[in-house]
Amino acid sequence: MNKYILGGAGVFIVVGVFFFTSRSELWTTTTNDAGIFGSNDTTTNLVVYTNDGFNPAELTVKAGTEVTFLNQSDIKMWMASAPHPTHTLYPDFDEKTYVTKGGSYSFTFNKVGTHSYHNHMQLGKYGKIIVE
Ligand SMILES: [Cu+2]
Image 1 (tube, rainbow, N blue to C red):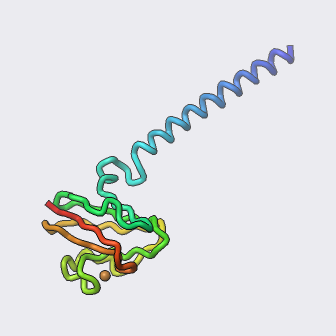
Image 2 (cartoon, helix red, strand yellow):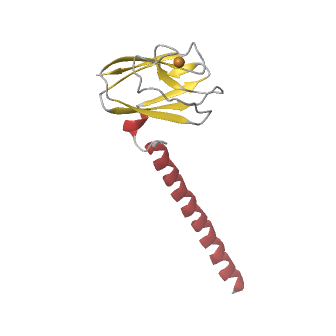
Image 3 (cartoon, rainbow, N blue to C red):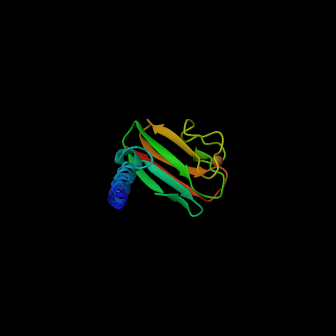
């Protein structure tokens, strides 16, 4: 009698673990689809800065679009428009400080045109945002 109760409990636990595992897999998949910035729309407006530079180095967006620059390099990242060091091409587009690895800077591009930028902390890494 006790043997049957124990066996029943075992099956219950196995089913329970399976159910829990499949549920958490479902949850993980949903999170990955949504991306760290919430939706597919915003992930396309992401520029990642690595030790090799900006990726994508050239991005075209519509006026009023927010672009996020994510620092995944080992270098400090200070986003600013050309030219260095005055940043007069698009003075508003100037982080005025820096973020380290894992940090990000978001800016809403309202001005139509080609906005060349660079990492103010490491000259030689360039990119451009084309606003239509
Ligand atoms: Cu600069």
